[in-house]
Image (cartoon, rainbow, N blue to C red; front, side, top):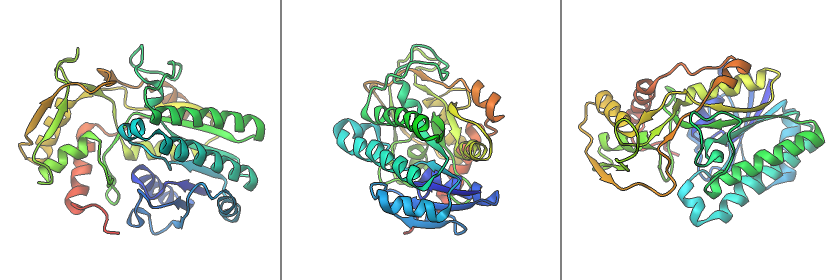
Amino acid sequence: MRIAVTGGAGYIGSVCVELLCNAGHEVLVIDNLKEGHRGAVDARARLEVLDLAETGRLGGLLRGHQAEAVIHYAASVLVGESVVDPAKYYRNNVLGGLSLLEAMVTAGVPKLVFSSTSATYGIPAVVPIDEECAQNPVNPYGHSKLVFEGMLLWFAKAHGITPVVFRYFNAAGASARFGEDRQIETHLIPNVLFVALGKRDSVEVFGTDYDTPDGSAVRDYVHVCDLAEAHRRAVECQVSGAFNLGTGRGNSVWEVIETCRKVTGHEIPVVESGRREGDPPVLVAAGHKAARVLDWAPVNDLEDMVRSAWAWYKVHPEGYQD
């Protein structure tokens, strides 16, 4: 197939592009490289440096590529930043997404697979979280993703675009070639591994008095390669709708740190801090729908995620050199 991937020079996008190329697809990567990296783009894919706001040029690229589907990763993704600079998130995630939808209509692209987030659920009333759970985001990042979900559904109704929405839980890990390299890193596993790499003195644990087995917050970590596989299935199969992507198993912050200690052989000092506002005790996905419709289930566990990320960071201690 001929597939366009927005944000394909970013963390999750780069791994997906690699998998699509491995499967024999012809991939066009569209990325403005403000957060992505040239070195993160598989050499078998074609890279076009472009901002999504350039609707006319974007439509021309999609038409020229004869794209049969778009996988849409491009977004601003820092929760804390979204609270202090909401305009950036509505501009990039909503207006940029609108521009993409308009370009798709102009180019006649029939399918969009959207990288959404579990942050659209906010603080859920029920755990594990299924797709019918009320979506009440508690920050502009989650709300911007939810707004685009709604826009996509209306464009699907008006223009016949087939919509697939993937609400990720906590992406982690790396492929052998591509990993996580952000200007500002907020994810737990990389920040723990940065201590083992000697880039940080300690890792901070926010909240040790939650109503969980060890007092720390519990999250659903899913391997980035498993996420990529779900996207491959979505573009290759006749499916539509919204799907939660997680393992259905939660791991606490302390479990993540202990796993990193085991994998790296480093002590990894910890600083205990108070809870962060808005952090729920437990966020875990109910993945029954993805299993039923996509025949998809994660094959990697927490140790696999940590081992793959650690292997990538040892080869790329300073990230991509571009």
